Length: 331
Image 1 (tube, one colour):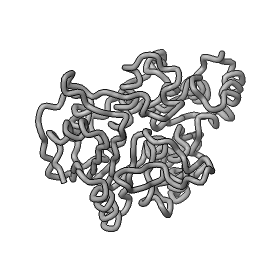
Image 2 (cartoon, rainbow, N blue to C red):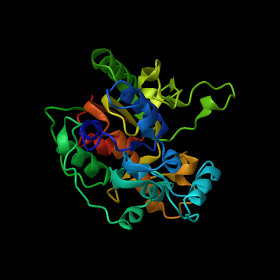
Image 3 (spheres, rainbow, N blue to C red):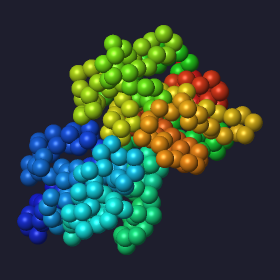
């Protein structure tokens, strides 16, 4: 965006960066405020684009754009569709296509994590010029690490892999896992614990319970703020959920794989217990168990690829821990 605006042909263009996740959106506003020629007003939520017209809209995490399914509030969604002359089947992608002359979208189907996320066929309706990003600059383990994580969660891994430039560890003891993440935070900063959505958010219910997660007698709470959590004062002592962490880079990610994900040694595959997955809007209206399995494995693929320098793993389910122990170095 800065490169375009810096050009003589681009300085008069109206450009916006659409970020579907509220938490990441607030962080990026702070970043844009510090960059010459950029402004926090250039950072938009999907609902903002219908209020104006743009020359170019860029969309980060485009797989998190929404369709009219399992929404907390349908009213603003329906109003946006009406204002743009769309029926109720209109999606946030349709809003972006109608609100700008040109669009640049960053999309990864493997990071779609909820039924509300628009489907891949929503993108194929439009004649986008496709470009493939063949590697991620975030993870120092490189594309080999990304493919290794996908193989683990697709139950197709066949052997251990050594990553000399990446710190990957599986922990047997939860206290050791937490201490290691905190040590890395002291040394490098931005080391955070994140987890799958397998624990109720009790601390938000004002029922006197001030924790959400208990493992081996250790009690923790989910992220106490939803905006810019990774930079908040107490983040290192809390657990970030997928909706808070997606789109962020961390120096070290401590990932808790919850009790909703296990391994079946007879079937030789990852299995999901839908009753232990507590994201109501994440599973409502799903009738095909394979769809829920896809969303949950995508959540963990996303969490396990947040860390630039390393990823530390703790697994609640014993069978899954045994399976992963065949492929990950154990502490």
